[in-house]
Image (tube, rainbow, N blue to C red; front, side):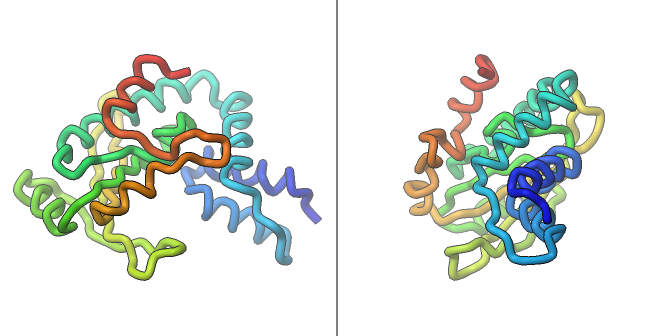
Amino acid sequence: MMAPEELTATAARLVVEEGMEYGAAKRKAARAFGSRVELPSDEQVEDAVREHIELFCADTQPAELRALRDVAALWMARMADYRPHVSGAVWRGTATRLSTVRLDLYCDDPKAAEITMINAGEDYDSGALDLPGRREPLHVLTVATPSAALGERVTVHLLLHDRDDQRGALKPDARGRSWRGDLAALQQRMADPR
């Protein structure tokens, strides 16, 4: 049987090496146990991700993170009417070239963001994401955008929330750190990445 620390380390490896989101990585790592186990918290996985990056990616990850934050800033400026907030690994500083850029948009009407994409001539996919605690799936627009710094296309997910959802979205994690930030906060992190 795998120790809890081993499960957390395996989940972290999946996040870094396969670009998986925390929840999916934890579930995949737990399947290796073959029985029901308590999953680590996102904070525990994030700590293990940071350790994995330090050991295996310290020479490449900072430049990859910068490139993804540049993409996020570009898309946040493009979608400024919808109060964009970057979240996930790009915001938290653990992104690698395999990570997606996640932007939370807060709209009166989710169709307005889609119309903005159409009017800009952007090629995108539309889908839905089931999230715990939500009655209805969250509408998501996905676009692949070029990154000159990475020399490849980056996946950007635009998660379309109701305008009123923004208040709850800004609550901090168990350690008092924010889960997402607006463009000004992202630019501050880019200027001083500590």
